[in-house]
Length: 156
Image 1: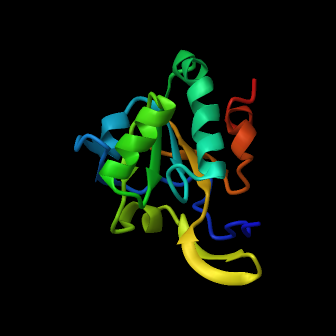
Image 2: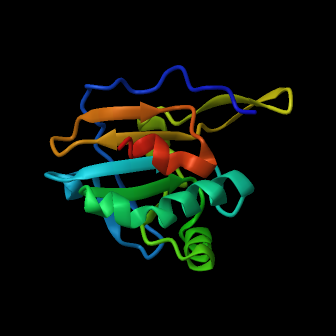
């Protein structure tokens, strides 16, 4: 079981600027979402059980996110080719940024030491941020429930 990321970005602070490329080579930046709400989620690896459960839960509730004005973007250190396969296999409707150099992961404190199977390793800390129309972090989730992540975000 992964350890909770204790150094998450704080609610109420400005979201760090990011730019990256999705599975199709399209450039995505924080400024693209100015005036919109964004769910920016960081996950360890395409096509692994937890990451697949999380992505499919977000996919299954995607229309609900759109209905309340949210865009959804996933970020991992996987390559664009890996993201293409993952999106195609599970019909994911949102972009996945390939952050192979860890720039975005580190800016959002979603990269660090975690404990798995009794040993410490460096890796992606499963983390989600909700960013408002002004680019301010309004929610931060470090203990993601992969099968029910949408419910954590869409608190009706």
